[in-house]
Length: 477
Image (tube, rainbow, N blue to C red; front, side, top):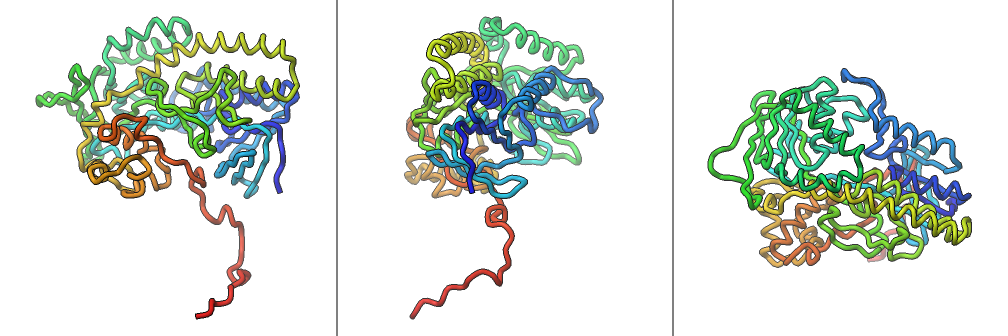
């Protein structure tokens, strides 16, 4: 049995909550769904309790997250947390599994606010225990109050690099080093855009100051070449990059001993739902990759389907909230809850504000973009699809044999068929294929399939007794 609502929102991060609140304030019947136990998303993730860090006072993002959750609790929005949405159909039908078992809803309109997934470009040793993504380290720090390591190497690109290193210091750890793919010139070039968001600029400078004050070694324009274990420690080999982005091969590598490696190469829009529904998408490298095509009211190419936040391009939490609010108001306007005049006035103000703050977010997204040459430095025997244990050489062999796109590579190698469904390996495999097929647009994206997330079959079929299963008669020979 299904329930029907006017608006269903998938994702309770900044964009999803803002959309739900904006529509609900206009008396739209709103349902919001999220797999997490509470609202907030990755940015405003709710801590579950202090488990081992020295710093226990609230961080600024925690305060914002608590305010957001309080607004949601005080609203008329119907919240369903702990729900894994595994199927979405046009119309719109939403199937999920949660604490109460299988649930189904129907919605007149659907807003996708699914956020991002993390990108890590493979290198030898990246699947070892103790190696984790920057976003994964952030989740440990924010929600579990657990340090990823007492002396980790923190590597990669973008502001998350500095946020993680600073948070480790605040929690009582001491990074062995910070390895930044970008050089100083790239950071300086991003400053003009950051002046539009002085609070974020000061926050970033604060992160850098805390790292410099503790005299943590910072190596710019460098990358992790490989990592291996020696006893209980990780050995991280770091090399500097040439001007064209390629890794230097002059024997000048450095080796660092650490108890963990936190590494990330930016974020990607999470587009599984919009791709499953068949919305138009476009590849935009500056925005993080494939993203749904939306108009200036957050509508996609499918009637009744909206998208907001970082799943439409990486611009940050503040821009995501503004986009979400605009989407919620658009739904309220379409359902006759607010007048044309009021909608135009509010929408125009939101668009102006979004344009201003998104400049800084887009600038940070550009800093997160890794050099394409890093793909060329992946050794052939390095695993790129860790779920199915597919190496770079196997992907290249499929391309040499005539594979003409991601889905054909998937069929020939099983790359992307594991539990992550290509979320981890998809961007890397696409980048490898683009070298052979003439660019990312020609390569395309994985076909999104049901179930959207891996689920035990028992969650879908429920409890049953084998002796109650009807056995059909044998077919005649």
